[in-house]
Image (cartoon, rainbow, N blue to C red; front, side, top):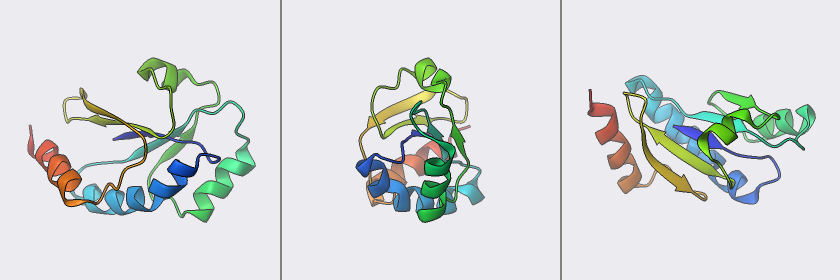
Length: 115
């Protein structure tokens, strides 16, 4: 799962907790949440403060060059790409989500079971 976010983005703040919870649920099953902050205005201190404040439990990357966001066609924050085990984008989700709601967990579990 690839999640694009920014520290100034209120919807990103709103979903941070459920992304942390999701990471704890899917990590033992071989899944990963990967966060990317592609904001060229973001400074290292704001980025680090966000990670510390929200105790981000998944790997993140500060991509101030926006190379990764451009390669995915990202246009908004938060924006998430669900990537299957074969590396294909299964779904693009724009906007904040409750990543721990039963429907989302069932969908993600079905992807993790695929070979």
